Length: 342
Ligand code: BMA
Image (cartoon, rainbow, N blue to C red; front, side):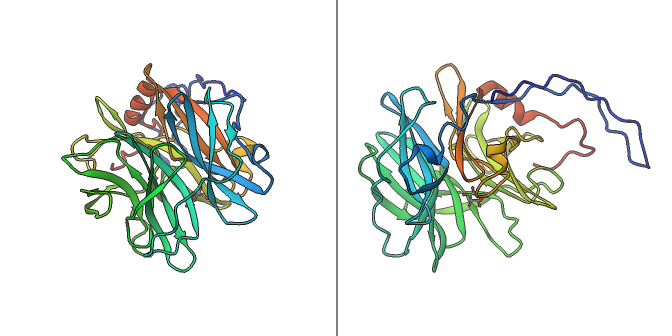
């Protein structure tokens, strides 16, 4: 279903019950992203029998195809990675079997993998993902491929209690750089961090980047989403934010701009979400009220495609313009009475 843009205007209500009047009256702007009419573009019924849910794909252009690597929950294993390929980016054909994942690293008894982010560096495609073990926790794993047929392990690249690892598409000041989300202390408010590595094995110089913003749509948790996009304004990062409600968590997507030389410096952060669960396939499923991304693909005309997991059950496609996403980083919410810190 294609969603219409919202062009209606919103008028500030007069002060009531002692609450202050919102500070501005502004038109509601158009949606930054449009959901594709063919959504969900991938769902379990397109996969071989035994696949119960497909979601949260990494995505990339490879030769003349779009390739996605999706989380697939199957009868046999909790979650495995499964490739689907497409010429037009809308109609995908899944491979007949899960991808041929390398054996677990000797240091970590991986028994489940999820949320892959694919970064092209030179001729190699580096996959950074959550490597999970029932006995040893969740860690950031790194695997590479050149052809999407054979895969080779590089490292287990964090201590336990870290995921949402995303590799930048080029070195920064001579080092590989990644965003990730250490869980940190018990109250789980750490947010997104950046770390650096000379070799994709040893990581350090870790610094915080984004924190949750209490009271906003990303007030409970934030995690890195897409592989950062290099722009003239800075690194554009599409991330997920979580808020809590009486009926449970809601996962939405938002945007921020990070400094090209020092991505721990946030240049701008949009106050509104750019994608949120609102349609039945996003609100109902294995985990309802979730939109979640691991990718954003930009073409030569600055069009952006985002394949997103919906309710941890199926995969949608959202499309927009790079320049609108950049504008969204600077957008203020007219009803907010204070400016939240970055
Ligand atoms: C996160 C990850 C994602 C998942 C999301 C909503 O913590 O586990 O894979 O989509 O929760 O369930």
